[in-house]
Figure 1 (cartoon, rainbow, N blue to C red):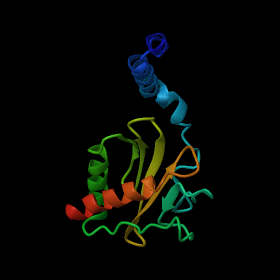
Figure 2: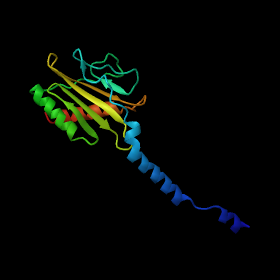
Figure 3: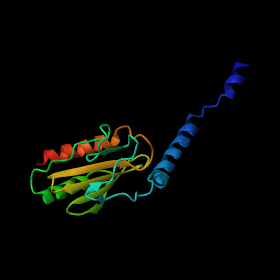
Figure 4: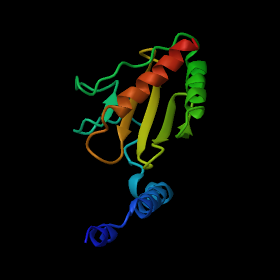
Length: 164
Protein backbone atom coordinates (compact mmCIF):
# COMPACT_ATOMS: atom_id res chain seq x y z
CA UNK A 1 0.00 0.00 0.00
CA UNK A 2 2.84 2.43 0.85
CA UNK A 3 4.42 1.90 -2.57
CA UNK A 4 1.08 2.68 -4.22
CA UNK A 5 0.66 5.86 -2.15
CA UNK A 6 4.23 7.00 -2.88
CA UNK A 7 3.71 6.45 -6.59
CA UNK A 8 0.85 8.98 -6.51
CA UNK A 9 3.24 11.73 -5.45
CA UNK A 10 5.02 12.78 -8.58
CA UNK A 11 8.00 15.10 -8.34
CA UNK A 12 7.00 18.29 -10.17
CA UNK A 13 10.04 20.37 -9.26
CA UNK A 14 11.40 20.12 -12.79
CA UNK A 15 8.09 21.17 -14.32
CA UNK A 16 7.55 23.87 -11.71
CA UNK A 17 11.03 25.24 -12.33
CA UNK A 18 10.40 25.28 -16.06
CA UNK A 19 7.08 27.14 -15.64
CA UNK A 20 8.60 29.71 -13.28
CA UNK A 21 11.53 30.21 -15.66
CA UNK A 22 9.16 30.57 -18.59
CA UNK A 23 7.06 33.19 -16.75
CA UNK A 24 10.26 35.03 -15.85
CA UNK A 25 11.33 35.00 -19.50
CA UNK A 26 7.93 36.36 -20.58
CA UNK A 27 8.21 39.17 -18.03
CA UNK A 28 11.65 40.07 -19.33
CA UNK A 29 10.47 40.01 -22.94
CA UNK A 30 7.12 41.76 -22.55
CA UNK A 31 7.48 43.62 -19.26
CA UNK A 32 8.50 46.79 -21.11
CA UNK A 33 5.11 46.88 -22.81
CA UNK A 34 3.15 46.56 -19.58
CA UNK A 35 5.26 48.34 -16.98
CA UNK A 36 6.83 51.27 -18.82
CA UNK A 37 3.76 53.50 -18.86
CA UNK A 38 3.35 56.45 -21.18
CA UNK A 39 5.74 59.37 -21.16
CA UNK A 40 4.13 62.12 -19.03
CA UNK A 41 3.10 65.33 -20.73
CA UNK A 42 4.19 67.48 -17.78
CA UNK A 43 7.94 66.94 -18.27
CA UNK A 44 10.19 69.93 -18.86
CA UNK A 45 10.13 73.45 -17.53
CA UNK A 46 7.07 75.52 -16.75
CA UNK A 47 7.86 79.09 -15.66
CA UNK A 48 11.41 78.14 -14.71
CA UNK A 49 10.43 75.13 -12.60
CA UNK A 50 10.23 71.39 -12.99
CA UNK A 51 6.77 69.84 -12.57
CA UNK A 52 5.58 69.31 -9.00
CA UNK A 53 5.59 65.81 -7.53
CA UNK A 54 2.31 63.90 -7.43
CA UNK A 55 0.74 63.17 -4.04
CA UNK A 56 2.49 59.82 -3.77
CA UNK A 57 5.80 58.73 -2.21
CA UNK A 58 7.33 57.69 -5.55
CA UNK A 59 8.83 61.10 -6.35
CA UNK A 60 11.66 63.31 -5.12
CA UNK A 61 12.34 66.89 -6.23
CA UNK A 62 14.53 69.79 -5.21
CA UNK A 63 11.84 72.37 -5.95
CA UNK A 64 9.09 70.86 -3.79
CA UNK A 65 7.81 72.16 -0.46
CA UNK A 66 6.99 68.64 0.77
CA UNK A 67 9.56 67.56 3.37
CA UNK A 68 9.11 63.88 2.49
CA UNK A 69 9.72 64.46 -1.22
CA UNK A 70 12.43 67.13 -0.94
CA UNK A 71 15.94 66.33 -2.07
CA UNK A 72 18.85 68.78 -2.21
CA UNK A 73 19.70 70.30 -5.61
CA UNK A 74 23.15 69.67 -7.08
CA UNK A 75 25.76 72.36 -6.53
CA UNK A 76 27.95 72.75 -9.62
CA UNK A 77 31.46 73.91 -8.79
CA UNK A 78 32.75 74.70 -12.26
CA UNK A 79 31.38 76.12 -15.49
CA UNK A 80 27.60 75.39 -15.30
CA UNK A 81 27.27 74.21 -18.90
CA UNK A 82 30.31 71.94 -18.55
CA UNK A 83 28.83 70.55 -15.33
CA UNK A 84 25.56 69.74 -17.15
CA UNK A 85 27.57 68.01 -19.86
CA UNK A 86 29.42 66.03 -17.19
CA UNK A 87 26.11 65.10 -15.58
CA UNK A 88 24.84 63.87 -18.95
CA UNK A 89 27.98 61.70 -19.32
CA UNK A 90 27.35 60.17 -15.90
CA UNK A 91 23.78 59.32 -16.92
CA UNK A 92 24.89 57.86 -20.27
CA UNK A 93 27.23 55.47 -18.45
CA UNK A 94 24.55 54.15 -16.09
CA UNK A 95 22.91 50.81 -16.82
CA UNK A 96 19.21 51.13 -17.66
CA UNK A 97 19.35 54.92 -18.20
CA UNK A 98 18.53 56.50 -21.56
CA UNK A 99 18.94 60.25 -22.06
CA UNK A 100 15.89 61.43 -24.00
CA UNK A 101 16.44 65.21 -24.05
CA UNK A 102 19.66 67.11 -23.51
CA UNK A 103 20.05 70.88 -23.72
CA UNK A 104 22.49 73.28 -22.09
CA UNK A 105 20.10 73.84 -19.18
CA UNK A 106 17.90 70.71 -19.12
CA UNK A 107 18.24 66.92 -19.18
CA UNK A 108 15.47 64.33 -19.25
CA UNK A 109 16.36 60.66 -18.86
CA UNK A 110 14.32 57.49 -18.58
CA UNK A 111 15.50 54.99 -15.99
CA UNK A 112 14.29 51.44 -16.61
CA UNK A 113 14.47 48.67 -14.02
CA UNK A 114 16.20 45.58 -15.32
CA UNK A 115 13.75 42.91 -14.19
CA UNK A 116 10.27 44.28 -14.84
CA UNK A 117 11.00 47.25 -17.08
CA UNK A 118 9.38 49.89 -14.83
CA UNK A 119 10.30 53.38 -16.03
CA UNK A 120 11.10 56.42 -13.89
CA UNK A 121 11.54 59.91 -15.34
CA UNK A 122 14.63 61.80 -14.20
CA UNK A 123 15.03 65.52 -14.91
CA UNK A 124 17.79 68.03 -14.24
CA UNK A 125 17.44 71.80 -14.68
CA UNK A 126 20.32 74.27 -14.53
CA UNK A 127 19.01 77.35 -12.72
CA UNK A 128 21.64 79.97 -13.56
CA UNK A 129 20.02 82.54 -11.27
CA UNK A 130 20.40 80.30 -8.22
CA UNK A 131 23.61 78.67 -9.44
CA UNK A 132 22.09 75.21 -8.79
CA UNK A 133 21.06 72.15 -10.74
CA UNK A 134 17.54 71.20 -9.70
CA UNK A 135 16.45 67.58 -9.92
CA UNK A 136 13.19 65.65 -10.08
CA UNK A 137 12.81 61.87 -10.25
CA UNK A 138 9.37 60.23 -10.41
CA UNK A 139 7.96 56.77 -11.12
CA UNK A 140 5.48 56.52 -13.98
CA UNK A 141 3.47 53.70 -12.45
CA UNK A 142 2.53 52.60 -8.97
CA UNK A 143 2.26 54.37 -5.66
CA UNK A 144 5.44 53.55 -3.77
CA UNK A 145 8.91 53.07 -5.22
CA UNK A 146 10.46 51.84 -1.94
CA UNK A 147 12.88 54.79 -2.04
CA UNK A 148 14.32 53.89 -5.47
CA UNK A 149 14.14 57.45 -6.90
CA UNK A 150 15.87 58.97 -3.85
CA UNK A 151 18.59 56.30 -3.89
CA UNK A 152 19.22 56.83 -7.60
CA UNK A 153 19.53 60.62 -7.27
CA UNK A 154 21.89 60.29 -4.30
CA UNK A 155 24.03 57.78 -6.22
CA UNK A 156 24.23 60.22 -9.16
CA UNK A 157 25.11 63.01 -6.71
CA UNK A 158 28.01 60.95 -5.31
CA UNK A 159 29.32 60.30 -8.83
CA UNK A 160 28.90 63.99 -9.69
CA UNK A 161 30.79 65.14 -6.58
CA UNK A 162 33.60 62.60 -6.98
CA UNK A 163 34.51 63.97 -10.40
CA UNK A 164 34.54 67.61 -9.35
